[in-house]
Image (tube, rainbow, N blue to C red):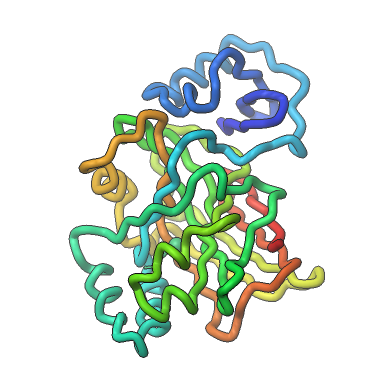
Length: 275
Ligand code: DO4
Ligand code: MG
């Protein structure tokens, strides 16, 4: 089941049919501990509804906070060590990769987040920017993983590499986050074979493409959630990006007009142009 927030209200899609989810705000839906069962019952009751338009889909966020995990793939560990070696930061990334406590950081709010079709931004004072395609957990107030969406953790690598203490500036700025297109609502974990695919198009041609499977994710999503909720409450649920396993070569930086396409098969495709 996929849940969509649209300009015409909220819809759930199952087997190509759409059903209207009336009477509850997006916050009220994401605050439900029984979201998978609630939507299963709604679909079973039917009937399907007209009126769903893919072009009207909004970012699947209202008042939720977006958090992110870092250095959860070996590839990301290597990239951070390399970018920060002149600043003496390399050792920290190596240590966090194998430490019991994961790296978790605050990433975004709804005002800095765009949905599919929206424009993400390169930070105005950055010179080396990349998208980070990440499986993103949808977490209930009690810490249950009730679904999955696709996230783009836009990052300024030169700022992050200059000094690890600049991480919040490299990660949190206007248009630094994309989520969507909708939420795959399920109480079951995704198979380890699930692939995250990234394609960056420049002037209509593929400039960079790569993919990674969830088998490469070092941390268990449930453990990431457990750490996030250790001393934090999320009354309307939250999003937790699980880190990137795809890093373009160091010669690559995003440019205005690039099209970033991230696909995770059971969820869909998140597509954003760089403003
Ligand atoms: O430690 C810096 C950020 C890492 C990150 O965002 C990632 O690995 O995805
Ligand atoms: Mg990231």
